[in-house]
Length: 262
Image (cartoon, rainbow, N blue to C red; front, side, top):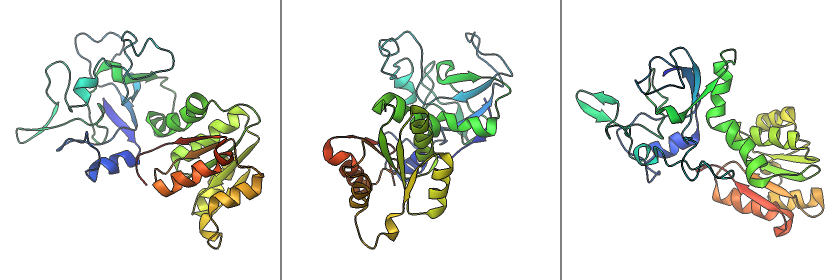
């Protein structure tokens, strides 16, 4: 795959810092991208040279026990290989430097001009889709939307708080708008991100750094009376997680934690 556009996700930084227990070095990081098929193996039938694709760190074969279950996406077809940073066919990586192997990351390795993936780890997209935008579907947007629609299954009229308004947080807000949430409270320490949140559909904004020491969860409970029905932590910060939990209707609502590192 010739990578045309690659986005940044904190999971890459998390692994680079040595915090990922499955991180294997040396490797080519990156998992959020879009590109064009440059060549295919002899057994590949569903892709052709020139196809526009999005690399997927979670494969989908359609045949394994997990793929056949509607609410689970933990395909086992190539998991043993991607976990070891190699290709399944021969248990070897396709990257090297001076004769020494460089391992794959999450089965994608998109921080490279060219990368090699299993066919089950690709999603074909229309050629008219802008690659500089749809690259975010590889992780950030799908993660945020999935949290709203699949994990929390937010219903129309619900209230929600979203902590951290990066790409994932904005995708959560967008998903909440489409789900028909009646009130969406964006929480971030940067006013510029709060403005983006409102552009995406947040009805309220809270900057914890401007509350004169008042806990953000108290502010949100005061704003709503009882807290929100759903809270989404898009930072991975343990202190923010606690605040998000306390904002979910004082324990009656649902809190969804997204991400691995602050």
